Structure formats: C-alpha cells, structure tokens
Length: 354
Image 1 (spheres, rainbow, N blue to C red):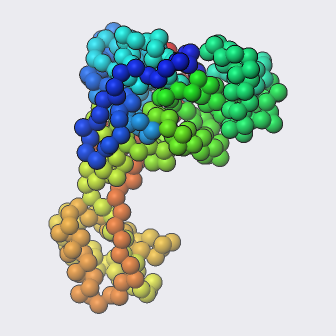
Image 2: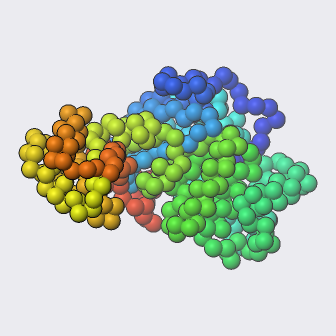
Image 3: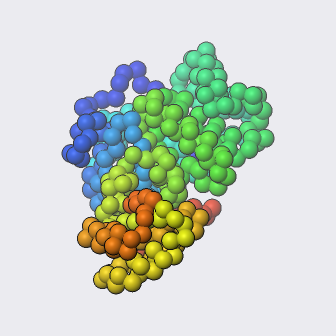
C-alpha cells in the first residue's frame, strides 16, 4: 500500500523535538509518547515510546502480532490511537492529519500498483493526484523510473513486472510527494535475496538524500544492514531499544575466537580450555573451517582466565578475537522466542488494523 498526500508549499510546521539519547545531535523526526491502541480487550499498542532521528533508519523488530503494523498505521493517520501522542515532522498525527499526510510516504508488505497500466502511468497518476501539473508529474515520474532502474520497463503494464520490479515501483510511488518521513512496513516480504538487496540499496540511497525511515522487519539481516537504531516490540510494548551493538552488549556474553598458530594444536587447545573447569564456562566448539576454537565467555574474568590458561600450556596463538552475540541471539534473549520469518497471512490482530 502507498499512502501520501499533497506536497506542501511550505516546510513542515513546528520545531522538531530533540532526543535525550546520549550522543545524538540530530533533531527527532518522529516522536511517540505513550501510544495506546485497543482492539476489543487486546492492546495492540500498550504505551509505546519511540524517537526516530532525522535522516536515519529506525528498525522496529517484533514477532507477528507484536503491534508493528498498528504502530505504522497510527503514525500514518490510517487509524487513530486511543491515547498518547505522535509528532511526525512537526505535525500531530491526531490533530493535524491532513498536514501530516503531505510529508509522509508509506510502503506496505505488498505492492499496491495498478497492474493494468504501465509503470510510468502509475507514477504519473499519483503525481496528478498530488496536484502536480501535467508537466511536473511527467518529469517526476521519469526521474523516479530512472532512479529505481525501471526506465526500460516504463511503458509495460505493471502486471508484467517481476516481484522485485513491483516493489521498486511501489517505493517510487511512495517518493512522488518527496516525503520527509517514509514508513516501510516489512517491505521485502517474499522477495528473493537478490531483489531484497536491490531494495536495500534504494532505501540507503533515500536516507543519503535526507529521508527519515521507520522500518518494520523480522529479517535480522535487514535490520543490521539498514538500521542505525532498533526498537524491539512484543505484545504492544517496547521491551528494548538502542543501537545494534548496544543491544548485543546488553544481552551479555561474548564468544572468544582463538586460532592456534599450528592447526594441529586446534583440538588440544579445545581440550585444554575444557579441562580448566571454570564455573559457568560453556563447552568450547572447534570450528575447523576457520581453524578456531570458539569459547563463550560471560565476563572479563573468564576471558582473562582462558587466555592465561592457553599461554600456560605453551600453545602458540595466531590470533584472539571476541565477537558479540548475533542479532538473532539478541532477539531470542529479549523476547524469549526466535524471530519468525514473515508470513503471507497476517495474524488476526494485525488484520484488524488494515
């Protein structure tokens, strides 16, 4: 689905709030406080707080039914929250919906283009709906077709496009009105890895041009590739937030990768560490492909003890590095369950927001 309204003649109203997040000197483009939305007895959103800095990508992670789509629909004025505030590009999402629609774009999980007309006609039509002149609508359509590598297919009916081409056309449609803030609700659902990478490239290009992006996703790789900060939601609540490395550090624990200078020392090294009998130290793993012994450590004390034991055994070490947990491991630790791959069928709670 693509939702944008008329391009404003003036810049968005009101001063942008500033984030109280340490180290951030950018204004906040999206500021959400205490957002609540009920569907019957169920709270789809239960007091959500969120800040998205201008010209950055905020990744919103959560399992199906966590409230991600409900959040996006509240911020794009498609539904009205029961309580709380949402200020986007200086406009109140509840009190100033018409003004807000002029400066936002929305791309949902599925391409919403008209399949019976061409790519150029799709974009031209949206431009005219946004009150662009015929000349400006045509120029804008042609510029976006070129930007999204669709010029060669511009005159073909959209129904002949591949899934990736339709997604790029949908992204182009969301950019017709030159939005300040773009919502991407699981934009790469169902796409093959190559096409997904193409969409990622386009999103990164938009951010370089100054667009602020709020991205909902269940792909951990997508979050790491695009987002500068993450917010994890579950059952309508924000349960974690921060930079990717920051969240990894909060989970605790690191993996020590020790590569002996002599690959014949690989298994003796692993046995030597296991024989240490350190309290709470997990069993080591031998990775023959990288020629490393992997040792999960929970503290600096354990790390020092392991390195000391290796040295005492007289084993010559080629390299020692540490790794933070993967984003998948972070998600599992925070939510108590693995991130599931996006499904074609939305759960009942999210369907209620459509």
